[in-house]
Image (cartoon, rainbow, N blue to C red; front, top):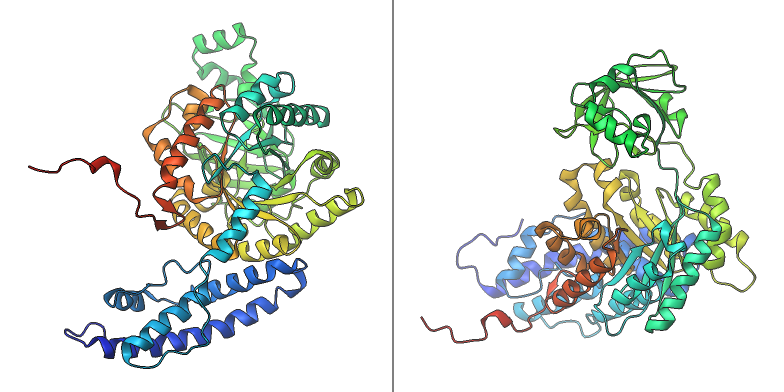
Length: 525
């Protein structure tokens, strides 16, 4: 333990004690990092990624230790507290140790490694422009926007997004098909040429997301619905069964292998019925991106009975094609589905970037790399990979995922906050998204800030105050993803303005001491 709590401790004595302590830290961190990095050797085919992997290993080793006491002492001496060492771990340690040596009266080593703050940051910027497009006149953070299905038939939709400031358009392979995807990409490139934009096309694989398929609603639930609503739905040509039953806290429903018309409770089938075998009494499931949660109260070979635990006061609908999350359940499902493999035939043709949904292990990354290599024309480079972090296991494996992908080609990491929040819980989300940002900075890879960014603005035409603050926080990432909506071009333009303002004040975690313009005038009372 350091003796920093003693009143009146001399600067020289404190510096000497800290110097000895940080030398011990450096030695143990380097030894542990060397072991970590050796385990990654087989994945490091790209030579220029090795230095990044080594820095990541050093950061992981250092962050296993609690250095808060040492930070307080370093702050007392007016030195770096190591809190901004992500991109240059060893350089920061060596610089701080050298300063402590000088303060303690010891001659610093002359062969120490200089504090190279810009080297890794420059590589991240280069990869950002490679993956998401260069934009010298725009904000430092790039903007990716999702194309709706209508974009295949209306090139003006794509043009408006690119004119507003998007440098990357996202095509979701869960919808539409190859012909529509090709048309969307063609519209995007034509608009980019018109506006002088360096554009990238990203294609997201649907992945093995668990969804509800068919829903069976008993007559009693139809009777419970307000007759006015049912009449309106039928007048508008909507099928009440398609909308699904509205459930409230305490209601029960079943997940089954096959629907039964005689059932007295609502039923739904799953896109992956094999998961029913993994159900256990007390297990908790989330539906429709967390809008409803339910616990298993009974289970058997044909299905599971669930009881709604949380839902909005006005109820939540159990409808077809809604996502289902099973936090804590190890899903033995391949990360690449048959639909994904078919989509890759078009991905290698038109995409600059491929989004890897529900990736969880290095083996998943290798499977994608092999599938891409088998489809690429001779001499054509593989598209960059975006690792979409959506599960607790993906968070745990993040360093290994980055090295496996980055060791072969350009890679970015998406903080997919929708599914991730459901999987790990909202309470953990803010903490984990910060830690992902730090890990990626240490690895020298770009980050995509995603899910519900300016959602109200894109869909309703008016942003909330919380959305504006979230958009400002997104400036610490290299790219922000916006979803589709009738007001998406306004959302892109609004986001670009916020990002430019925040560029003046922050670079990652570091505040920039530019002038505070709100108080330039006289301050006399």
